[in-house]
Every structure is written in C-alpha cells, then in structure tokens.
Amino acid sequence: MAGLQEVRWLDSGEASIGDTIFIWSGRNDGKHQEGVVLAVQRKLMSACVSWTPINERLLRAHFRHATGFLSFIVVYAPTETADTSVKELFYADLEIAIAQCGKNDLKVILGDFNAVTGSSRIQGDTALGPWGSGTPNVNTDLLLSFCRGHHLSIAGSWFQRKDIHRFSWISNDGTTRKEIDHILSSCGKMVRQCRVYRSFDVDSDHIPVLASLKLKLKRSTQPQTKHFIPNLSSLSNIDVSWEYAANDSSKLKATYYLEDQTLEAMCGHYKSALDFAAREVLGKRLCAKKPWISQATLAIIDQRRQAIRRGDQRCLCFISASEAEMCNFSPVEGAGWETTVRRGICCCKVARALQHFTKSAYTVSS
Image 1 (cartoon, one colour):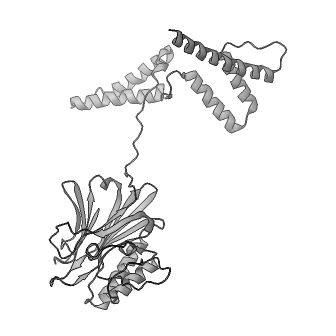
Image 2 (image 1 turned 60 degrees about the vertical axis):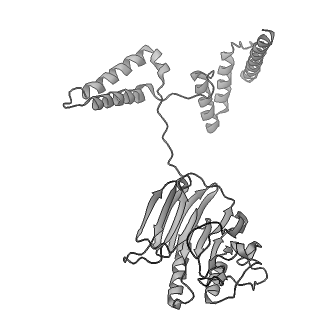
Image 3 (image 1 turned 90 degrees about the vertical axis):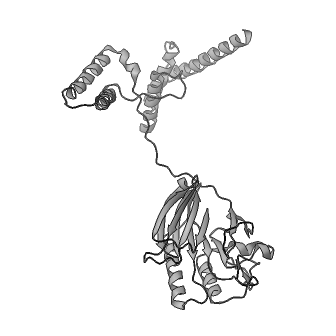
C-alpha cells in the first residue's frame, strides 16, 4: 500500500488501474489543490472493511488483519508558512479521525507532515527515536505533541540510516534537504525497516519513504450458506417415499397452470418444488466425517450428548447397553445392570480391536 499527497483530484472515489486500486479524497469546490490517495494492491483490497474520505487533507481506511483491525490514515499537513488557524484545524480533524478508529486497532499514519523531527530527544520518549534530524520549528512541536498524546512513534527516527536514505524532500535549489515525510505507527515492534528509496522515479521533489511491516492481512468475506443435502436413505421406507411423492406432486400442480412461462421459469419451479418437498419430508442428511459411521451410530451419539446435558446417568447406561447389543453381546444372568453394561462396553471394545487386528493381519499375509 502507498499513500500519495497533493494529487489534486476532485471529490472522492475509487478507481482501478491494472492490479492497483486507488482510493482518493479531494476538494469539492472545483479547485485542483491538495488531495490524498491510498493505493492498494487488488489482492489486499479484499481485507478492506471500509474507507472514509474526510477532507482534501485526510483519508482513513479500515482493514482486517489476522488478529484484529488496522486503520490507515493518509495525511497532507499544511506547510510552515501556513496560518496557525489552518494548522490547528488540520490537527483537530486528525484528532477526530484517530477517535473514529477502534480502541484496539493498530494505527498507521503516513504522509507529508511538512515537519522535521529534530534531534533533541527526551529520555524515555517513545514518540521520537535516537536518530531524528533537522532544526525544530512550530510544525515540529505540533507533530511531536500529537504523537505523544496518542502513543504513536515516528518510524524513521528509530533506524540509523545514511543521509541519502533519510532526507525525503529536496528543494528547487538542489541543496536544501529535509526529512518531512513520515510514517507513524501505534506499535513500533511491527515496523521492520523504514528508509527513503531514491530509485523510484515519481517526477516530484519528494522521494518515497518505504516501511516494512510485520503484519498479515485477513480477507474479509461474507460467510457462505451451506448447501442443503437431503437424506435420500430415508426413501428406502415405503411410507416416506409415498409421502414425498404426494408432497412433490401437490407443489408441482400449483405451478402447472401458470401462463406465459419460459423454459427457465419452468425449470426453476421444478427445482424449488423438489427442494421444498425434500426439506419438509426427508430432512437434512447427517454428514459423517467417516463413511463407515452409520446413521444409527450418529443417532446414538446424539442421544448420548443430550443425556450428558440433562445429567441423566441411567439413560447413559442404557445407551451404552445398546452399543453393546450392536456387538451381539449377551448379558450374564444374575448380574446387575451396572455390571452388565460394563461388561458389554468391554466386549464391544475387544470385538472392535479383534476385528481391526484380523483385517491388519489379513492385509500383511496377503
């Protein structure tokens, strides 16, 4: 993702060029001034939950990552020569944009702040790192006050770099160089590197500042509804099959006398009639993860789950006894029902183990 400033685009909107999605916020009075843009790769746009154009200097986008949410804010601050009221209004709007972010959101603010950080660092300061630059001015005080008030750190000041990888703006005289483009983050640990890349040819007096974040975005998609699969095994029962046929016939007769039907409409009515009849009569098939689990076993599992929720111990014993009957276990005469159930469960496990051992031995010998 990339934040662009002073693009001079009007209004706000979203456009797609190749594999990049451009989201912008500009002026509404027809003047081609200011304007900010957030450029996002198409594959990352699926993680975007929402985006809000605030004004010609601010744009906020909300993304979902692996453990929460991430808020991106693209800014274009007034220059040092601007009026004090314009500067105060800009930081007031930025305060509102920060307040609209979630309490636990990770925040990344990137753009042209038109302010140097200075090299005078307070001991234990988390906003400014040990490698700041420039001579402080009014914009510096506004930037540092904003960062300290919202627990944001200036990423570039925490990495020791050469001057050619530090200064992001070159004046027209070719001599004056300053570091006025910054990337702010609410979690300094996720920033792995932050430096200026001079190899980018963007036809501007600003040089792009790139930061590497250790973060994994998460695709934001709507949950898909599960496909209905009818229980076709119940059609082996004659009564159920006759009931299903009667229900299906009544639904088809209701749509038979409709006039001016196209072939697609008739096919749709036929499918809906079959689907509704299957839902009412056959019901949903209980999907088993393993094909050798029968419907009777699934029914016993469901009964056992309900008995555990009720706390019915006697019902649990009877269910275990029914499991023993599935292994053709014969109870011992004169023994209590608890002993019978325990022996039945033990015999059931032994029978299954022997059956598995026999299959394995047969496989080895063959």
